[in-house]
Length: 315
Length: 239
Image 1 (cartoon, rainbow over the protein chains, first blue to last red):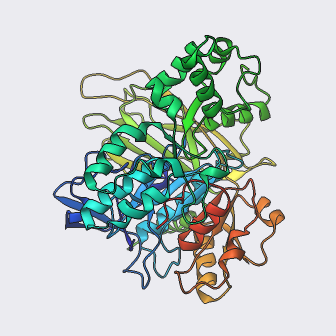
Image 2 (cartoon, rainbow over the protein chains, first blue to last red; image 1 turned 180 degrees about the horizontal axis):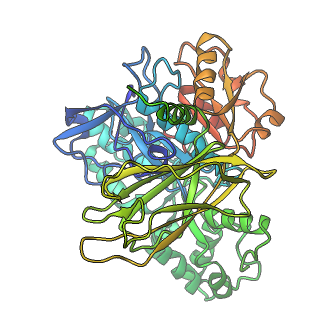
Image 3 (tube, rainbow over the protein chains, first blue to last red; image 1 turned 30 degrees about the horizontal axis):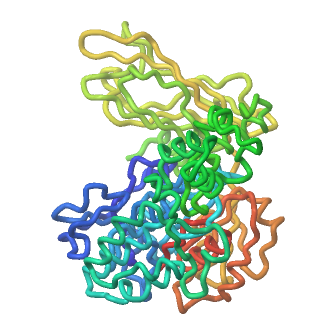
């Protein structure tokens, strides 16, 4: 990532208050690496040209880190704010300005000798903006999302990089699922189409590795029920089945145990009562361990209301 | 030649530019108000930046029909107006397009809380909307930034000076010396990084930045490392 940014969320407070930020812009032809791709800040892809704002006065001697922020990669964190993309030679979707909870990532220099006028104003605005997030909670990071598996499909096809296909993806699976792997582009497409909606991780030591920190497994229960593990309709299906008997009910109960965070799951198994209470409070977050859990934004609002003496949770 | 009357106003503007520009919240702007409004404040001045929609105008003074704009400091505010509202020049008494208005302040309370109201009447060539009023609310205390760096050298001192020039109270420390108490005592922590290969601290030292309730702005390479070390997903895609 260099000294430039694009896809800036210019309506956001960090570009407007208290110092309206004005950038020098350059326009470049769309990069080959961007063709056919979208990103959170370019949901319809990049047009014929890419408009770039200068955050530093020139290209740094050493590239800044590239944070890959493809849809779902880790942007499933509730309240995550992706506010600018860095200019990367590698890919579209490299975030350079972002907020999660009380943390803000600034991907450029903060040396006034290197900052442009727009960057100086934006940095000051970021400091003001972040003051409002004291104590702000977010979800913990447990594992990468399933989207990181998909990275190797387009990266390999674009660059001819076959190690993802032959080594990284199978190395990121539990042993049983490595046996289902066919290391060809066609095999990859077929495997992804069939298994990706049922992939999960983050539940135990079998899902963490030395080389590949996140190890994925395919949920045979969810697959047998035809219930993609992150869908709300699947959660509702599991709850409807859980009270019954037979194989499907057993699978549903295992899915509920696997995906509803134990701290909020009903101890008495009364899922209908539980869901009436939690329906509007829960979110499924892959990067927090593939759990249905309480939305940290709701918890934060309640924490602040409680601190201010207002009535709190409906729980 | 610049008049004597204009010099104090210019000085006021310069001083204002160097003081902390704290955001001021605009509360309950009516949905049908044909304008956008943002406000910032310093202990010396409250400034409103307005953009009035095309074909609409406000009134700078009484021209026999519309109600002129006004800013009123409320009793519960720790500040009161030190002088009259400062408006852009207007030959016909109307305010159109983009412009700023301000009012000089003086602190009269023990705190730093600003509570004010802004009243205006918006008209187009045919008719006027009923008079409107919004609440302006903010804390004008200077913001305290803890700048954490690898080593304190000329570059780092320049960064601290820059932040001070923008009105922040900025304290400078290193990753090796920073304490939880120091983080908690500031409004925001700014965790710096030089470029990879030019770091002035060990990565492990930066990753050990205290966990704190204080918001952290993490910069560059060390920023990715410390955010990951603090258990957030945000930098998990680092390549």
